Length: 240
Image (cartoon, rainbow, N blue to C red):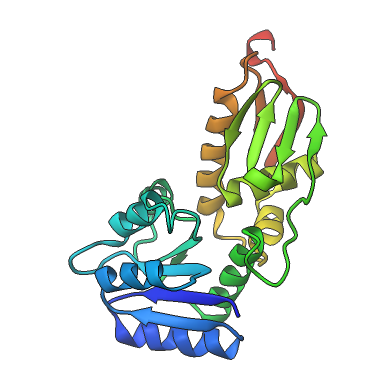
């Protein structure tokens, strides 16, 4: 059974999470203390962890970094739960190693949809829709076993979410992919207003790809007011 750990100092929120996730068929541990929660994370076979930001002793950002730095827990998917919904707060969370971000207050259906989508993205759910084999198009090669992208002769490691975004862009290469489409295909739900999450992940993904581009080509274009487009052979902006 898929097992989830929720860490939040609000016991009412923990009860809401536990009830809804267990009704959906998950096993759910809870902790209202981040230090005790991290101990559970190391002791039990946890498939995904939900963490609050504002907690005593250890805040959610510090806890996320601790999870990512520990050899036993570094690959466990993390969803951050918080009332801090500004872009800077989300960016701080993603920089701490968080995979997804849910702003409080949230509906139980949104929570369940995001949990399921992230489990699928990371191969920990009942099924995974990610690409199963090596895929090459133009200069770009996707390596699903290691969540790696190769640009010609150089490669870099991506997060599972970054890998899935790139996979969707590859599947629709040379055509525009809207933010709504990315939210649907990567996160598994329809939500037009949550474009900040897309922007942050695209920013990180673009930076990683551009860094290993030996020809200094740009591969992901922003189509303002619409979405994003992947150019498999890149575009040398200096020649335009």
